[in-house]
Length: 214
Image (tube, rainbow, N blue to C red; front, side, top):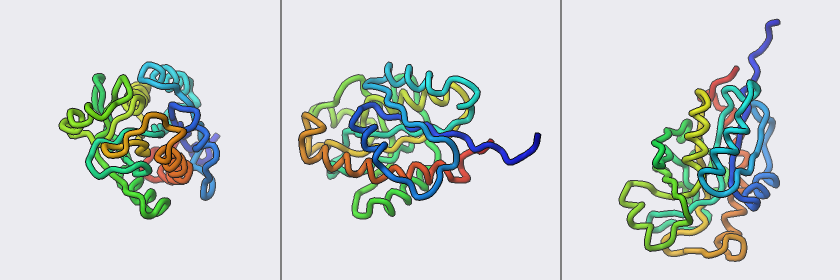
């Protein structure tokens, strides 16, 4: 039978329980374009690949938009906890994945959390938590931030079929603000509050005409 095309779903992927809690307690300004699923992948690229592959299996998720989010380590001087990173692309040893709708995300983030810096550029993957002495080497590659799951999440997503993908991360530590434990220090609390506040931005991205509908 005929009728309006069904809106593609949105899959939001994060690694940690505290990230998922922030997303579950965030709000939305009106309905999303289609069904929204938040999946906690667990830490590291292998866990992200497995979880995202499972989540996208089956015809119901065909064409689903995928957005990787959570916390990250900032690489550039001047970054602070609570700053935002919008990836233009993600990188890891498996390759480079371009992101869709970067400009839209930047504009919406600036409206959602005024006063927070929004950085754009490549987001690189790591197989471990990056410490201070490693930052200059990663910065020299052109990356502005690093995390353990975004690149694997988006690479897996586009490997299962054509779909729009993006990555938005909140800086939890930076060159001058290195943290040891996310949940107990001020920078971690700040990053949690920012992540909770920006969930509506992900829904705006999902509603964008840039994303295919079916």
